[in-house]
Length: 286
Image 1 (cartoon, one colour):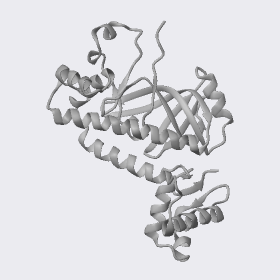
Image 2: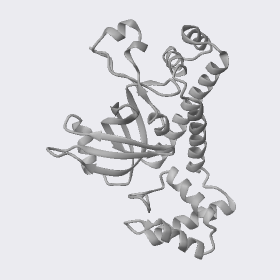
Image 3: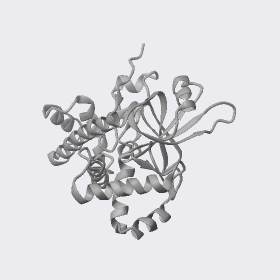
Image 4: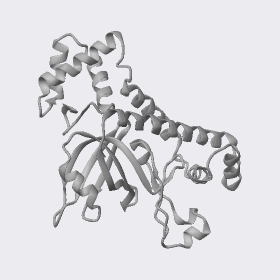
């Protein structure tokens, strides 16, 4: 009986950059075993088959033609996951048939990759289990995932600075306290040479995402500005949301600079407190 792979925590920004881990890169025994599950590898060397994510479900559609096939969009502070659930995922399918959008949810599923043509890659999650959670659980997931990602970034940076490659690099990282799986993944990822710009983007996304959580609610003028934007969204948005251009005009007319409105709105979007049900429309969560 095959062991069930551990569900990894990963931000959407890193997940969407994952690619298939070629069987040739695995151990000889795994490469020859047809029952071994397919794995993906991130630009930082995280090897995964299953994932655990928490975020806001902002879009949900039944795209099935001969039965239910749900497609969901789950947002975290760095981006969005695309999730599917159909007849072979009955628990997740039932959940998506009843959940109300928007909502904070926790989801476990299998990572999937589809490449219809060279250079065109779609990464998604095939849901296994999903549950509604609260904002506190979402925030804890963000912090835990940020800590794990920062540790991975540190190990990757250490690998770059070492000058080692292949087996020599793997042994070096293990001696430095890195797990054998991540050490193997980093040694593989380094050969792909797609990491430098990605590292900058990921660091920025994590920093902005943690800032967006705003655990202490902010202080002084910034807190007042955020509260003003929230109240105006409630006033103008109702149950359907508000056109962003109209919202911006009204906020400026009431004395809030356009740059401030944009910054606060960006923080609210990253923090999952509001979302775009469609392009150009802003709606509060809850």
